[in-house]
Length: 133
Image (cartoon, rainbow, N blue to C red; front, side, top):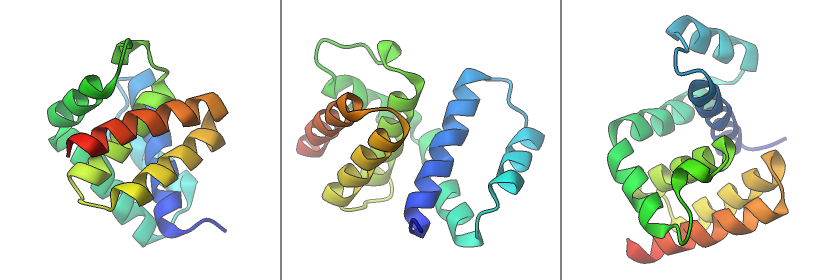
């Protein structure tokens, strides 16, 4: 069974996806998402930290991602890849988690939710962000 942080990242990614696909997502829908996910309080707490960090520091996170992209515009990325990058950059910059651990986890989530090519892309972008920190 995946660990608490993996579950939190996975659920936070799904919620980021939902919010981006439907910007009018209500708090009631978010609450229903968490009830359906049936996660522990620790998972919910860490996912909340990630989502709050993205909301609070979104401009800085988006700038770091944009600066790390070569020949790409963030708008061209898939919603899932963009969400993965935001989660990982938030965790490295805002929550001060060890970059190597964060990057490995983001790559694993990319493999789980998208594909191997996206995993390599996420790895490269996050490594560039890491080097600028």
